[in-house]
Length: 446
Image (cartoon, rainbow, N blue to C red; front, side):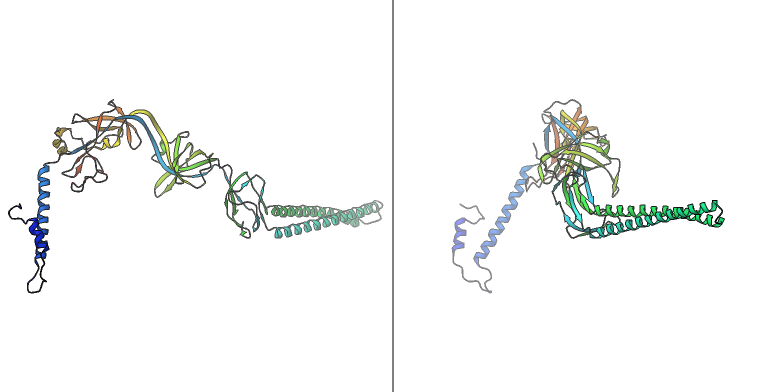
């Protein structure tokens, strides 16, 4: 039987099913329209009554306490950075002369041996220079022979004149002239001899230039870069143009990482390193710090120092130029007591402690603590207590607990969330809407 003041189901159904006359401007809305409006109003009223009853029945909401346990395990402190994978030894092969590339004997990924010919330039111009230098040497030698003959003739004339002068058959002036002719021919001979040496040097230089048109590999290794093609003109005016880059041994690589100045004091040669590359995101590669260079690099007022990391590449997965996400292990504790870092960020308010039945005087002080000091809240039988602790290293998730020596398994508070006031005692946490349920990132009560 329907309640007083309500419409029965059968009555509603009969009204709904009853044929209605067509509406006209004079009569206004039909009975079916009125029924729909009534049902909408009843639905709104029922929803309001339900929500009101929900909030009245809930009463005051207590703060939610999230806890975790003190565990025993490894804590590893690492310095994170990025770097570039590169060969340990790589040589840039260029050309000392300008010309047109006529032949290439190597390509990308080619394996070459030291002394192997890997490129040639067009030698026609340099062949002509060699021929010209050779003709200059021939002319210089001919002039040398002529000078030698002139010297011999002057010496012969001097001998005859001297003999006649001894018998006083020639004047003194003729004798002096013959003597001067010998000295002049000897000096001319020395000049021609110098010209011969100069011509020979020009020939040698032309020959060396011709030899530079043949380019050989300076080391054994793998070609990782080819910068020219056949028919391309290379100019060696100011600097040697790059033709190839040869990596000596790709089974031994290194990572050139940049360490921020705030972390460089913790990095030492010999420290272990782990890193990953985008090509193999599931693979962790390992290496060792080999060198921390003193040359600083400043970009946008940020100072960094290059750090070289030696890496074995026996499986040839690493390739030059890959970007590595590096972690340099600067400290490691294999088996220590550790607490979640979120437990160190709990800062309950006086209202939260009062709602939980805890003394308000136990609220966290505002005094600044050092990096090795902290304050945590432990939970035992529903009672919370604050404890000052001394901390060791951290890996970003857990922190080493030095003092006091709390037992493994002790509950520590990681968040205190008040759902009524939408406030939380953990830095960065966000309360959810009670009508929408728990939101991602909010603390879950235990």
